Image 1 (tube, rainbow, N blue to C red):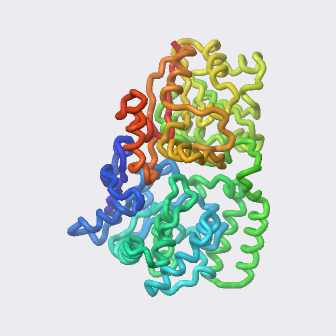
Image 2: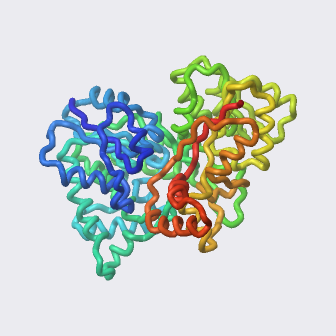
Image 3: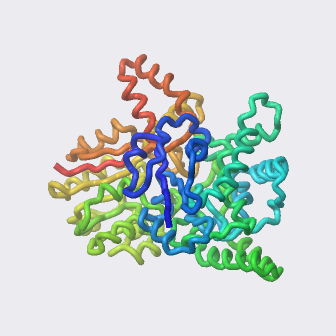
Length: 499
């Protein structure tokens, strides 16, 4: 079966990260970042004269492999193993979110109150008969991030609805209440507008109508969400119950499903941004692809500080199974999971280890710190301690948030320095770094920075701040080009080698 699978690139970095096999969907001009992936997909169909009606078309964001753990060959193999009468192949991560919420619109409403009502109003406006209060979606129809490959007949049905949404959102008179709701800025990093998530839900809505033949790649083998991902067994049971609800409709299935999800939701603490205390950033099952790319194959020993559940170790050892990977984390629940993956997993605070405990971790080829150093009380001291025990050629690989990012500068400028549960303003960040001070930390303590990769994410709104960032650099007597470049990186992945 034919499959035309595209990698969406919206910057030089994402352009260079394309995996072999994918076609390029070039969105580096990024004309409408406020529409995210919808804009380049829309442009593709508007500019395509002919499509192969029997082929499958898919459009994946740069983080597709990071979120799904699927390579290009994994995707094509799944499609080729399927039935050619299938209309849509689904590759959707975060199965817990899909399982514990009746449908994707209910899930959106928990993070963006009012989103479900906006969606219902939109579907009513265009004459699409659906009751979002009662709609039940299961893993065969839940799709996040538009991760699917579908025949043109499905994409045309999708485009017909999304174009109506686009027309309403783009109205200029400002009098339409629905337009205002679609342009509502959510709490998602970068203040992404609600319209983006409504577009994302339309795929799932169409698939839930049972007129399309769908095959879903096993979502339980992909990444899980931060909080709900800890309830894996309940999620699997809940999804099976939803499938039974859709196929059989017996009320007993619904009763047990509602009971299970209520029990799960009661175990999730309410967020209190002003006063909540967290042991660390919430755990997740994603791995950092930039760090993975910096790890040479077949290392003898790696020590990862902040290993969480051992996801990076698992991914690395797929190709280097002989590596002795030692994971360290301050959360005992994470370590319980990581012990199943790592050669050794320790529950410890790296800054409180005795000299003897530290010595026992050496020698090691590489030390990994994925978004950890900024959480430490004295990361400079730890870097010095590691260097004193390392031999020449050993390395530290770290990913560190960039406090020079344009969104950080913009919020600081208006006094909105408010801690959050994750991101640049993570309430557990004790130290803040820029590209310049990251390099200084390593180079002043016996390391040479061999490579530094800017991790740039497509948060809309940055363009309007760049002229002002350039102006501030000029006012300070610094290079405006460099200031603009440094304001684009959300994080830096760095490989520093002991010299």
